[in-house]
Amino acid sequence: MYAENYKIFEAIIDKLREFDGAIIVEGPRDEISLRKLGVRAEIIKLSRLPLAEVALIASQYKEVMILTDLDRKGEELAKKLAMYLEGYGCKVDTETRRSLKMIAKKDIKGIEDLYNLYLRVSLRFWPPEEGI
Image 1: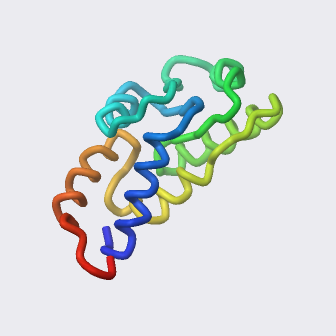
Image 2: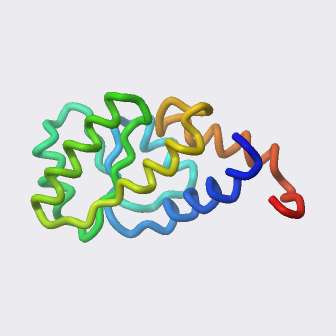
């Protein structure tokens, strides 16, 4: 990760920690990674459930963040989920995933790798230098 992206990455992690809705991830390792980061929001896993059912469950929350993996399959899942959720009138956050993809796609494959990336960049960029 480039030094100029570190502050953006920190802001994303803070946003995840403060999020007060439901976060949709692909599987249990994604949830573990987010919990290690200190995320307290409700986490809904896609594994073994049809997308329409996941969307129905998530529609009970005012805001839903979609954090599928950063690959092509994750992109397709995110688009379909967003369509379902918007149909239920949910406020859908796909921007966080998009931001992560922009700054970290070369460093991680999916959300399950987020915690390890956080540890690596925290050690690399801490203490923060002037201008970073």
